[in-house]
Image 1 (tube, helix red, strand yellow):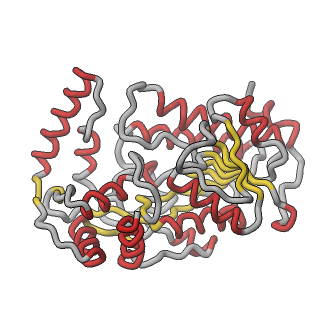
Image 2 (cartoon, rainbow, N blue to C red; image 1 turned 90 degrees about the horizontal axis):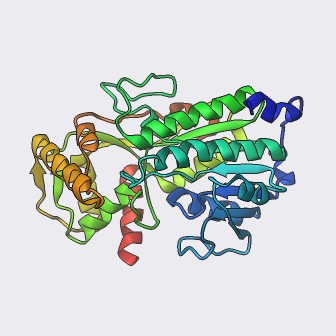
Length: 348
């Protein structure tokens, strides 16, 4: 079935929306790092949140009178059809964001096919607007200046997560062309108060440092990444639903911070000063190849892979100016966001 056939019955419908009329919202990935905080923010605003998850007893699912757990899977359209019934908005945050999967097709299945299924279900149900959570990884590494939404990618797609999220954005544009109101948001490296999971790489670094188990700085520590505070990113999602223009992408980032700045700020926020070991890039690449070989021979998950080692040779700098101008997006200063994150993890 073509996208036009899928969406044809809804063409001509006016997709303006009124905040006061929207009471029921579907969130996919409701147990994820962004999805769970987004669920809580919407629930606190009085919306009825349908929290889609494969396990309604998941420990990361937030309990709230306005959050209703719904058993479902983005890979099973029938479950989406039931979950989305009566919803006027959808936030699609579910994704496979791990570094590695035993099933090489899992990234495509979750990130591309899953997104297609969600959009098709939304189109069929007459949903008014969708916010799709992508990633700054679709642009990949940068050179001298922070990238904007209009910049092209300058290298290939060696990392499966980035490649499949890019393909998922192409799916979004297909549905937008057929009349579906979809806005894409692209968070950078998100961190903040929340569970430390495999996909929460920044949280793993912070938690490891606090426990004395992370003592490594790659190379000379000058490599730069963009770090976005979780609460800023959630606010950006809400603003994208309210003000975002269909078919547009909005970078939801933070400050561009080097590894040296990152661990210096972390040390000041935590009051803990560790002696850090600077590991040359060549040594990291060698170790990543050993890990790759281990995984090939044993099937055990790798700690690090060569494509991620190569990424350390480049910066990842992004501009959130478009989101600031059109959505009113605001960035919490990195030191303040780090302090809140450290305080939370110490208590947790």
